[in-house]
Length: 449
Ligand SMILES: Cc1cc2nc3c(=O)[nH]c(=O)nc-3n(C[C@H](O)[C@H](O)[C@H](O)COP(=O)(O)O)c2cc1C
Ligand code: SF4
Image 1 (cartoon, rainbow, N blue to C red):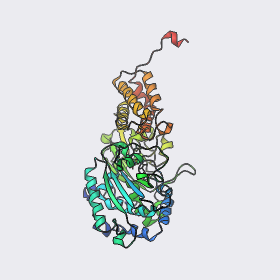
Image 2: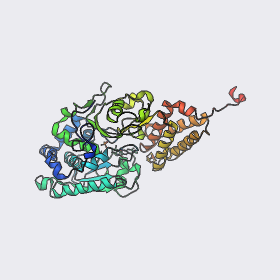
Image 3: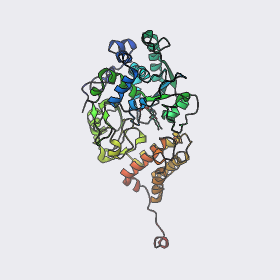
Image 4: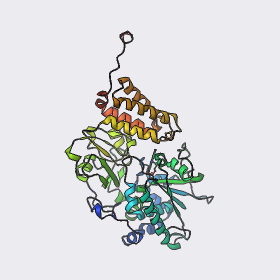
């Protein structure tokens, strides 16, 4: 299952279409020479509402994790009231362990992202864009900063209006570097960080579309989501829908389009590939990554970022689309960047490692997340050391199973990562845990009651 041509990676040589060794940063001159910024010209000839309608028809589902259709999100914005700025915040935080797809775009084709940003601003009538990039992406931040400067110099951004003032619609674009906190990838934590505050997620509603950055209407979109917009504007929604898969659930939301999938872990050739949504995980591993490393057997995989939970040994053939959540009992597709585990992997250690990450990254506002992630980590450490009993295992499942947005006990979805890691890993690899814990003996006088 392959694309007939590269779309998001048209200018980034990638397997199976090109040699990754030949990658280089695409300058604005090369970008425009190869058809770049023509989609923006086309969009500017359309009414903003027509652009929103086209993206809505395409059902471009957000590539940042939750899969919310971009056109639908854009349509939640209130009409422009002339009372202040309206913002686009581009989420390039990409701090999810094992996820490295937005980085590919920032590294090599920054103008594809900037063109998507300019089109989204026109469609939604937003006049200021903040490109929020994770603190550790030093090189990518410099590439993006240079590309933004190029776009200003060529008159795409700036007060004169787009295309050197030919179109009287002006957008200012700023780059904002994060300071290294995972929670600043959560959209309202990101807004707080841009405002110069501690990245504490906000209680929703109000949603950012209504009251976002500096209290004004704001759209938050992922880098890859915006990079997909120029192709949709150029080729139309029916073409976008010819790639990917419909939902297997009658009336369910489809998974159209190509997707960047960064594959890491125990595969022969890890890397970031562009593939159609719906590709089976086993095809991604066997065809794109040259199979399992050292010919070992597949044991499991992080579905798409560690917050989504883990796939079991019998789920190797699962299609990588937005139905994966209910089909494979994980939280969702997430970033579609799987980490593969071979037969020698200790799933207790995997679980402890994931929970340790969330414990360290919890912002501390909600008690179940702040305290629960620490307790879960302590229990897992005890289990991994061989000092725990079956009662500890039950307690672990109980503690983690009561935290998260899914249970209505936290402000944001970070805590759900602990819940899904524990319930999927313990549920799908219970034998690994039971081998480590000692049975809890119940005294005869209590058992007899
Ligand atoms: C704890 C947490 C971390 C997140 N990190 C990211 C991130 O690094 N990048 C991202 O695009 N979305 C991240 N998200 C999702 C964002 O909140 C938001 O849904 C997304 O940026 C919207 O863009 P999209 O609709 O284009 O996918 C995170 C969510 C949570 C709960
Ligand atoms: S769930 Fe955790 S990370 Fe999210 S707001 Fe609450 S304490 Fe902070």
